Length: 427
Figure 1 (cartoon, one colour):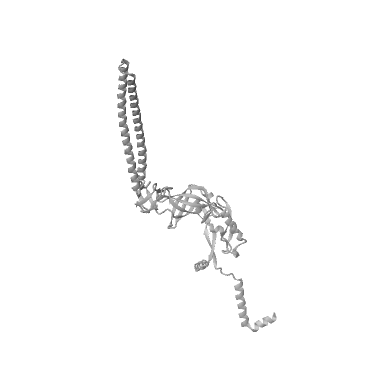
Figure 2: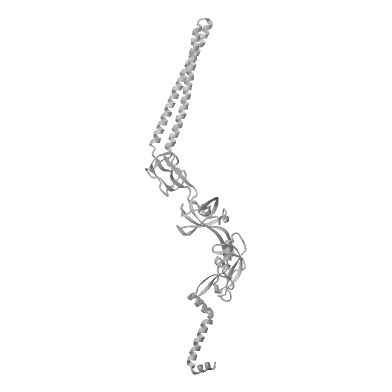
């Protein structure tokens, strides 16, 4: 030790430099280092907490009608196109009417022929009735003469036979008239059928709406022998539409009829459309390993922006609380950096995530959040009870008050943060 002090006395400058270097090394090791990150906080506030079930679906018209052809033939004219507005009874297209028109003419001729046969039969009836009257008078006259002995029995028999023949002719004429009437009815039915086929060559709009699909052009041949071919599709009322949304089986238990819905479409990413759950289909749809259910949403389309076939990104509002005490969902999942935790571990975040996933329909699930401490790099834990958990916010039922702060993330320190720290120190 004495040798060391002697050496220091003999070399005071060198000893001073070495002492200064030693002090600098100790200071660099023991002095607190400036952190290159800070913790971002957010205040506990009041507002709306919404829990959503997300799904995707497609838009379709509320009432879609397929217009087909009931007879076969070649399309000779088409009077509408895609997106054409049509009114009920409007002519959409025509099928070649040459054959149906010829069948109508033939059926009409058959009706006229049957009517002529009826007229002949009626004339024959009149003649037969006249003949019967004549033969009856003749027979009665001969009966009187036979009683007086002026006519033989053979003459009386001859008059009787003539009367019987006249009555037979009358019956035959009446039967022919009945046959003619039946022929008229049959020919009239054939005529009506032919006229119906002729009318079906004109494809008429069954309702007012908009043509959303056209499957034929002039020259197209349609065959209606086995099934009715579809020519046009008409959306009867595009001011109201439906979304067919596919909801996963894990979420379908939260969906109820009458719930409010928000959705967007890719064509208008900045517009949020509103809808309502109209129906939940109970038939499951299985795709690979997933099972989903179809949920029908009722949509107003008064502005006409929505078109059939558009893909809808759907959010079904299953729970909503107004003016709730809330914190960001990120706060329930956040963990400070490892060196800044006071006895907490990664299990805290895992427990919070499990609590979030099981909080549907439950109340007062306990989670751990981090709040600022006296040392900004030594935050403290706080046990809080949460109600419903939405996408952005979670409802707080106890453990925090309005205005309290919670940690939501850590971020790199910026020049503005350093200036703010210097200003606070100078104050």
